Length: 68
Image 1 (cartoon, helix red, strand yellow):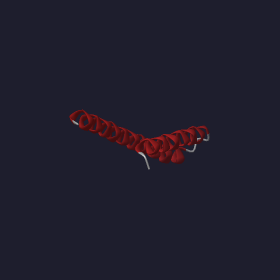
Image 2 (cartoon, one colour; image 1 turned 120 degrees about the vertical axis):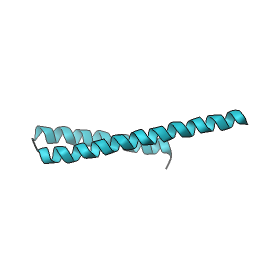
Image 3 (cartoon, helix red, strand yellow; image 1 turned 90 degrees about the horizontal axis):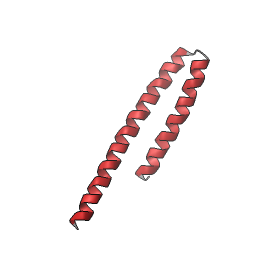
């Protein structure tokens, strides 16, 4: 799987979790709100790490190209 596709998949999952979070808040199901918030936090961390590695890979590729 390409890195950009993986980031898109994580972003889509994050949007879905945020929708579920809103629904759980409206239903006042605070146990579910807590669980969803944990998943949202994990997804945001995964997106940040993946994006960071994506930028590093791009930077390394640019340096290699410049050296050639």
